[in-house]
Image (cartoon, rainbow, N blue to C red; front, top):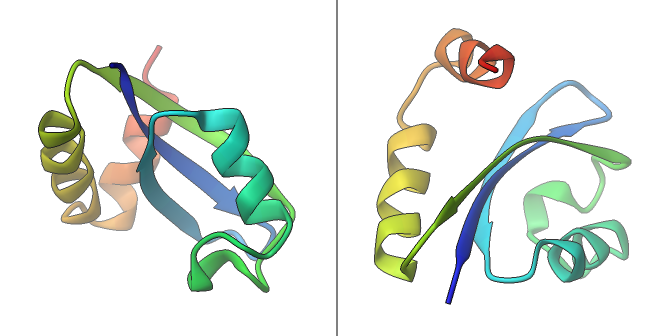
Length: 81
């Protein structure tokens, strides 16, 4: 099963990083207020980054690595082709 690490840019300019195995469902969940508490009052969102990985464990590790980055490094990641 493919897992996706994603970064959302919220309406307030903040960035939210998460993982899912169904990106469309997860985005709908965030948009409806049933996603993460962090995103509930920060919509609408723009998906700025996605990365597919082969396992949940790999996705969790990548999510943790991205969350450890400072904002400048995250923004640099978003601009990579």
